[in-house]
Image (cartoon, rainbow, N blue to C red):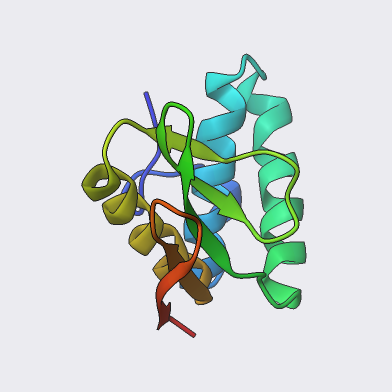
Length: 119
């Protein structure tokens, strides 16, 4: 069962709000990938704490051969791919908001349509 801000491992109870949310997101992803909970939780906490101490790079909403993709700046591959721009935009806004970073939205031709700041 995925964790959320109301139901999460006891070891995350003393984390601050955004760090706790990030740790929960990471732990959920790790368990989805097959990590055991006992291994996923400390990894997630460590990565969330590192994330909190670093400025987050912008997220880009870009055209993709399968529709639209969300890609962190300088990443080699997309984090998520959606069939429609609307679906991708909804998720991209959520990610940028959670990471308190900038979202750069591109047009179909790759040019920049607009930028939204969530910092």
